[in-house]
Image (cartoon, rainbow, N blue to C red):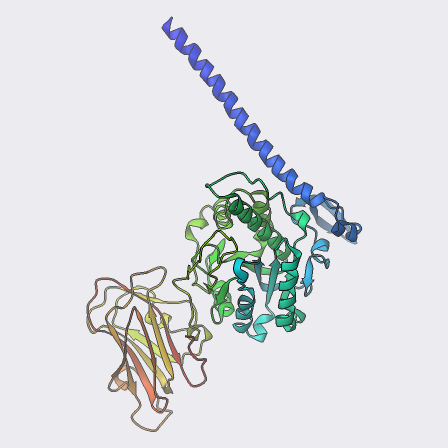
Length: 496
């Protein structure tokens, strides 16, 4: 009797469990359907934009895959997309300044910008930084696309006018394009469901930010091989493009995303072939969570194995904004701890030299920290009088020297006890050839290491034959020698 009762109750609970599971699945499918329908509805609304496009149907765009058979093209199938048609993006209602790019380049930099409280504006200085730190030749490999994402026309018009007045030359050259999203692209931003105890203002703000970037990625998806998601309040690293391009072209590992800033989503590099998929994901999940969380989850879903091995090149962009575009946020001084503010190593202007060391290697070689690129020398525990020796092939005029230890990968592995030394040429023969440690002569201490760094300027009247990084005291931690930079008379000055 008792057994029969237990079996009956068990069957009843199993039946209830199955019904609950079916109910959850039904609700999930319904939510996905309504979200998709809501997005489709906003794309299909009749508007001045749609009427001006004539043949534009107003529905989701469709890309056709075709197979050529002689002069005929056979349509294999059609793939729907949440991204609007190229014809829509190319219209003056969207592309406001500049022209819709038609040739493929190496990199597109996408920036979504909105007005901030207290009249704070960082977009102009961010754009100027991108211009200042790219050469005329490099600009031909880059598109910069700025989305003015305010829903209020006066704010957009004012910023559009300032961008044209300040950067008209670069707009005409095709380096800079300014766009606006049409209102029908946006889903409902009122009454966003409560999550994370966020206020209604914050929920609407983050939901709109997700949609802004969805539209921007849709616009940029076909322009280049790589794409940088960049915030509108940053300062660029000198030669950021050459540093990034060298890393991408020289690295042998595959990566789904490249971090070029540590904090939040200040600067992230993606493959452009992923943009349409990401844009659709952001659009459908617009009201779920902040964009940096969505970015992480998209990577984890798409590339679950490689996500654990995401590379970090360096902080090529420094967060410069203090006032957030969300009024309820306080001042934000969230600076990048490893901003790559120095330029020399990546320019390849270090005078030819042979670099040796008495330190035992954990990773890399001493020469790697001196040569052009992203190399480094990670040594084991240093002892007193261990050294790194830079022997110039030809006695060299040196203006400035910068040595940096420690990094995001080895936050504590800096040189705490060390000095920077130099040996100088004794004669007037500027062509004296150097050949190994014995040619260096006597060393003079020219500077001390402070917080893992040494920065010194020298009298240009004396030519340097060798430089030495000398350890003055044993330390239990390793040393991560990130880079050695030497400026000669033709080099660029160090950035302060």
